Length: 354
Ligand SMILES: Nc1ncnc2c1ncn2[C@@H]1O[C@H](COP(=O)(O)OP(=O)(O)OP(=O)(O)O)[C@@H](O)[C@H]1O
Ligand SMILES: [Mg+2]
Image (cartoon, rainbow, N blue to C red; front, side, top):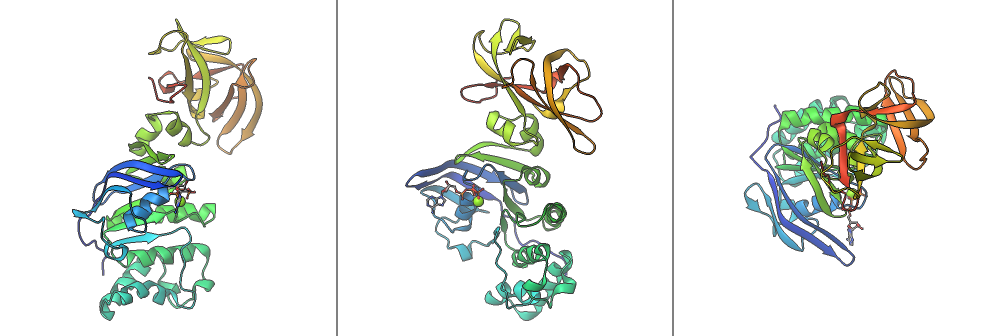
């Protein structure tokens, strides 16, 4: 049996807010087309899980409408929303075998035994669980347990998958491989998926689109590439990227931006005298001479394998710290900027200016 999807279902959130005594989420507007995989990313407490729980029906919105496919689900109870949710702390039934864990939800929904069996076997095969079906959860590794938890959601053939940090219990290596499996699985199933994570690598590698959240508000919705290359503000710019983008506070002057004692010859859209922040990613700095440069004092060089990470600061200004990622170069006296990879931000609002 092939794994197939049932029907077309995007997810739409219209003017959603959620008000608690001392926390307000929203206003959230989202329109996720059928079959896409979107990731929600942002610092702890920004509202990622709450949005998932609202879609699943585990929380009720204070205002606004939620649609799954064409159906407004505001008053539809969770079990009738046809979504499957996988939590960070997936709880498998410890006394049941893998086979029973996978079949249980279908049994509860009174799916006939033959269909049940077909679906469970197809899912077990696609997740590499065929040889583990008779084991109990305690006899599985963390990664295998994680796959059973995913499998339990997949056999239900929901219209939408809601995944809340499903890989966060795994070690780094297993996380990488399970992430890749999940991406393949999505290509195969083509079911709408919303994937919550605070791991930006996961957000980048999995997503058709990324939603960056901060303090209960959407900062930006865009493709991974656009989030990385055209961040809308300083929060998005510094959150995505590892190590993060360097931010150098400066002041607009007639011929550029003054940073420390030197002027970087950048065109700015603001009046002379206005404070602004210059942003540049560690990999967009180089020790090979180019037009734009600043003098640098190097504090430390770390070898990362194929690359070196150089820690330094603008000469004479220890608070103006810089990280440089370079492949082969030895640090020099000046650091050079890739001219089309420099960003300007309003230092008060954080909005991007260039
Ligand atoms: N039942 C509740 N009552 C009051 N406040 C709540 C409730 N549930 C969540 N919150 C608040 O809502 C905010 C968002 O929480 P949420 O769990 O959505 O964050 P998150 O982005 O998933 O964070 P994390 O990455 O830590 O999981 C937090 O400030 C939290 O304290
Ligand atoms: Mg959460």
